[in-house]
Length: 353
Length: 268
Image (tube, rainbow over all chains, first blue to last red; front, side, top):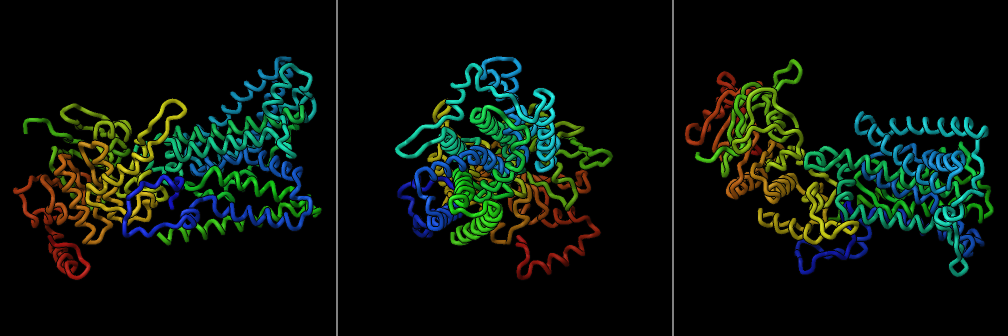
């Protein structure tokens, strides 16, 4: 199978070539970037289903899905960015920045919270553009550029919050106009049978579907693969490499805005120091999901599976009544195993053509 | 020639700071002809291509496309004027499937607004038929292009240029990394592109390959033009002599004779 992993089944009929052995559905599956992570997810699921009695309950399921969705929403654009060959270390704190801007603009102007939400969207997208433009102009590694914005945003978050509200967290905006409608969009929940579904899960599914569509079925998707897999070649055949990269950073910013608004409307207040370290978890989810760290290969669905593994592990340890101190160890081991499995699967898939 | 040349370079020069990369080079490319640019390493071949492909701009002299003076700001401009360049690295993305590579940068779409999407079926079928037309029977257009052989990849790149209506095809050392047999195959496709009415610029340091297919020959040496010939007015020996430089010829002949043994180049 291929790097871009177009869905099987769209094969043209009657193009029988005697040199091409019939590819079994299994072999086609093997070539998909997500495969390693799916195997891993099933293993993690079975493991916790066996060791943790309460893991299979409906309530646990919804907790796991919620934990996965908060990571998953960000893992999707981070995965696209990684396929495009770049990192964004500022993604974690950008979520907090987005929430802080929204909260403080609404509170300071005593305006409808939707004003804050929209201003926050613009500001967050601007941060994404800043990352992208700086990267494409200076041609420095994205690791350095976004490490810079990561630190700058961390400082700005804390500095501005203390300057404006006097403490490290924002004032509650729960009694302000428009709060309930914004909460409905970003932080509500509903029940489906016995399971409580948080609205972030819908956002997550929507983003994964949108990103998959973009990657596999649009010109922009083709460009993402090419700027990650061979930027010089992409430029030579007329792909707008700069615009593609800036677009990818704006995608991260957009998801950070969604996550940020969720953060704000589920807790009414925002702690200015939050978000640090999450950027690595997004990257881990993308890598576990089969994204090649050097770019040019991966999928959005894989990032979702990566986020699901993260959710199952973080909550499964609680349900198994283990000391959660061990969580990071498991996450690290999972990352290594997934990467090894991915490498092995891809090698096999390519060797057998 | 009644109609103007597809590409005409007249006394073109290019400087990088105080380095003279190219000085006073002239060449013509006509439809249905192959213009060979010959030169050793560092002769200025790459600089010449970059000017034609729109990666660099010339500093002196004139560059005209179909009789109109031109100055190409970016590769896209060159593509829009019908100049397609196949680089040594082939400008393909190894991890991407053949069909995605074939249409990279010029993807056909269908549908409108948010439902605008790649016409995947058209892309796959066109890739298959276009390659077949060039005589390449690909096993699977879904395989990553990195799994094809060097010659096959070269041919995909040429087929791509031909399909996208290139009037001028610029080939940067298409046979440099290939064995004798594969070189022959690639030269056949170069000739096929010529027969399809394209003007071809063939950059090479192999006079044997150039002589086999070329209609015009431009020799570069240390950034300057050391010779310009048309087919029939020059022999292979003269071409080789001029390329190597008279004094170095004897050494070269020895080398060539030895090299034309097993595993050596095709002595034409």
